[in-house]
Image (cartoon, rainbow, N blue to C red; front, side, top):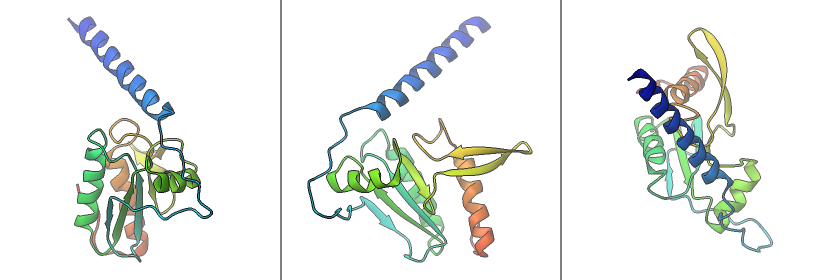
Length: 163
């Protein structure tokens, strides 16, 4: 019985890896529009103060497969209205694609104050985490909240990140 569970778990992990690679390696991303100057993308979500302590820019397709990530980030920003801003950009649009390319991202991801790569502490050990691709596979809510808590604490913000 345990062997079946291990096999099923292995197959699920393999399927998830294939979906991640296929989704990020796809050549179906919209090509950038031919313009003299990069256009400003119209985020499908924009909230929070311009001078926020923590500025989040999420590059995800505006579709059902990525909605849960953007919904989580929206809820998080709503819970921290004075210190967190969020812009969610669909990188499949021509303007969104141009801005996304300038970030150097190879797939979807969240920039936290302009960076995707951060260090978190897990079980007393410092580990690197990258807020790229899908939440729940390569990074967790706990990783994200640990980074934001640190930034808010360093800035003396009065609203700590909550679950």
